[in-house]
Image 1 (cartoon, protein in one colour):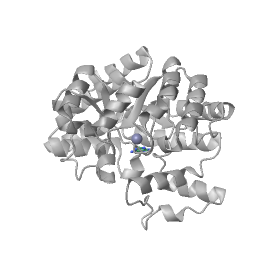
Image 2 (cartoon, helix red, strand yellow; image 1 turned 45 degrees about the vertical axis):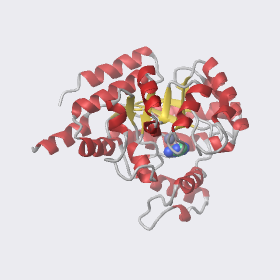
Image 3 (cartoon, protein in one colour; image 1 turned 90 degrees about the vertical axis):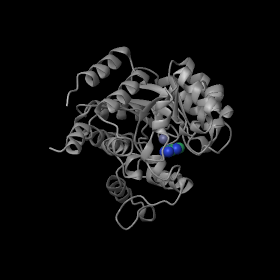
Image 4 (cartoon, helix red, strand yellow; image 1 turned 30 degrees about the vertical axis):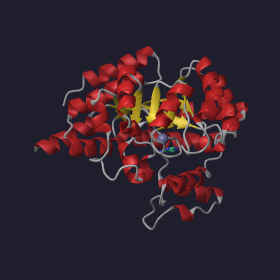
Length: 335
Ligand code: ADE
Ligand code: ZN
């Protein structure tokens, strides 16, 4: 084998820990089409000629995302989605996955309905071998603060060993993060780990807002912190972890290429970075592809990817036994 082939082989086999993944955003287009047909929905406008998701920019992406959610209506639909997502992730060596789930899509913010969705998702996840999953309850920012409060009530009622985090996604330019302080305070009181999408479409101030107003320990993306040297220093000193999704950023046009992506600079500055896929089929990515692109762009090797995985295990919203088992899997992996 050539050196490149050896690295490709090692990347495929390396155990991977993924912290930033949206349950509906991971839906394979084939599954969405099949479910749409079963429910009598016409979603042909969200796919291109080759059957892939079609969008021109971030706001269109969010719109296509919300249309792709439409066929997923019942707890059983979400169980099917969970099985499909986990089988796909496990095939790429993911051994632990945190996925964002929004009460707005799963029961409309009603706590009793949400519990049924979580029950179905949990059972489906437990049936897929080789991969462990946790849920991050995630209000959608452009739906506003009231649905976020309802999401926090759902989170409080299901917080435990499966529902372990609270986050926020959606349009980063809608409203202000301080509108969501109430929801994040409630989630923190329920013992949940906290993360927020920031520093993807908003600049460094958006990252500062997430830290100041929501008191998160992880940031979804956060990469635009690179535009503010003081903030980079602060992130490195505080140990806040970035959930970096390079191919998402390239596909949506935040950066023109992997080589132009700031992940290597952030890492070199001492910021704790991890790597995830975000919405894999939307961005034609997988965890394997994420690592391969980083290897090509920055000459990273197995030990770099092991280090990213260890940081992810340290930052995971899980119990200490699970964390120790993940760290051990990463440490004992040999090419
Ligand atoms: N929801 C799904 N993917 C997202 C992204 N990349 N940014 C914000 N919200 C999202
Ligand atoms: Zn995301």
